[in-house]
Length: 228
Image 1 (spheres, one colour):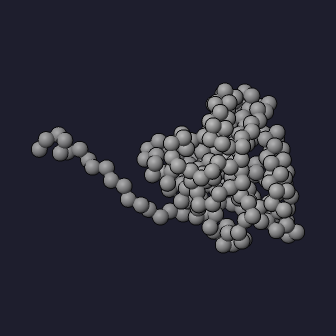
Image 2: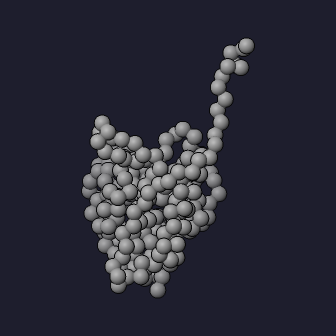
Image 3: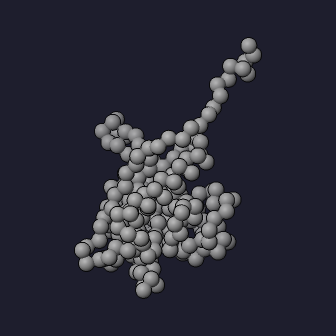
């Protein structure tokens, strides 16, 4: 038997898994027909990121949801469960699985609370790529994408997408990973594709800052006004 005949054959098969998401319902006086849907960073959980989204100033019309990555693992020697969205292994399949997962979550939210008038996708760090993918590759178009301290995923430069929505991309002035220079490069990429893109560089590092929360709040107010 030759050596090549002994090489294992790689195959892939689909699997159904269950993930989790969290919703912060609006006050009873609010219709909740506008959605802010978030995607956490690596090593976070959906409920943790929901707390950051909940700091965003907004009216009672906004329903806040946070979706968790399907890849869960133990951190800190097994004392804490965290999640991430994907690794480089089987990247294309993972992207397709994640987009299908987001579509499933949005279907469930709509079944429970009714259809939205507008959706804004917000991501932090690794979750930024998911915000872009949800907005460009997912089943539902969005009014805007919030990119907090994370870059545009490279496949969006080559695959066909719908028309680019409004984008607010931000980073901290001392962020050593998603630097202001990378933010500038993404801005050029976005504008070259016709996106209505703006940026924010806040004082700080790799974080969801108060300045970013306020900028997102201003964007939500503008979208809400346009929906009337």
